[in-house]
Image (cartoon, rainbow, N blue to C red; front, side, top):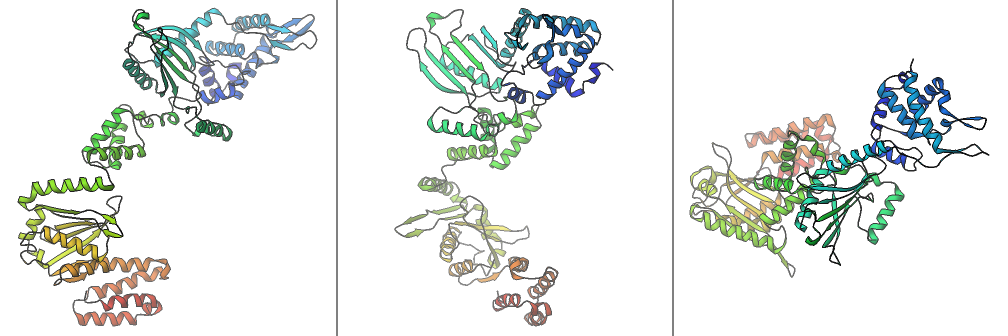
Length: 596
């Protein structure tokens, strides 16, 4: 079996990944760097590769891996971590060639042996190997320079002319330090280039300071930092120290990233072939850039804001707009942008955009400006729809000197006016239901409606700031003033009004329409009974709840008063009812109000 066959599939993949980025294990930051940029490549994996190489090489070419100190034969592989770069180079060439013959070993090992023997000093007393310095071959240096330059150009936005001055590689291909010039001539063009750079590289370089030049050689300097680094103030410095001590940098945006971008705008007098901007880019992020954990902190793009504003203008709420936008993004040609906050804002961002849009297009939500905007809307509505029966009224909410004036908004649309005139049922039977939770202030809205062959039809709407009997009476009185002269099919008042079980609502309606009979809604009554039975505090057995509910239904659906009295007598004598005295007394309270 060859030594190449001893390598597992994962190790082969890791070696191929290392071909472009070779790390030194004896570097103090190697473990952190490997774990950040290559999570699957661990120190133990690479040491395993080295050990396998050592075994194979030692067996075949022992003499190539030793040096002589006088009469003492010393293996150069005593410290594989020091010779890590050369061992990996041999392993790469070995595996890429996929040949195990001694000739391949001989050429690779011989070159590395000569290299090491020329750069290792042997102590005569302790015979310890000490690495003095590393000499990189000129061809390898030129290859690395070209690779880094391609990496830099891949991050720079297109459509600009660049002149590279200097490119230096850091520990790996993802980190570099370069300086170049751009053919720009103004501050506006510099800002556009920075925006294009952030979009192309998926980084977020933010302006830290902008300083005007003191002499004639510099017009202005722009200093930018990675947004994963906080500003250097006292409070932020303390928070950075806290992050380091708690070891939670990977879960936080602020990693104290050292990456920087410095641009210098030169005066026209120093313009050389159109290059008036000098750039120094230190691309040494201490975090991954194009991963979800970093992309979720990017700022919102102007295009995404515009798209959401268009959705809000078409009637979308924040929830429906976010669903619509994210669905379109998933079915687009770039679904991976979902993880990028720049293109796909978070839910909290969507609500913030909606609040800004509403403030600009609808108005503020609180204070006197809110009521001023509502009064304008009511005035415009009355002016536009008054001739065809549309009317509205608003009373401002105020609380001055202990005297509270409730909010009252009454609306009667042209359709509601026509229902009053032409629908006979409007004078016979009216339904009034109070609903809430339509907006953040939880103001109740009372909808007045009637039945017809086509279903329910509206008669009026009242919005108040409270559900007390006095406020309901004031709201219904204002609404009745909005009705046409022949309201309720010419009768001026309905005969029957069906409401839910609300004492305040009942009292307020009786004050408004004295002649109307107030009835309790069957649906709401049975709903309250079932909720009472389901309440654990009342101690009703689960198997007996349905039986008790059927007894109440027989009372509700009795056709005559005599049948009702008979059913109630059966109800009281039922053994389950006798076992639950609390339920019997609860129904007895409704029995007193049976005419409703």
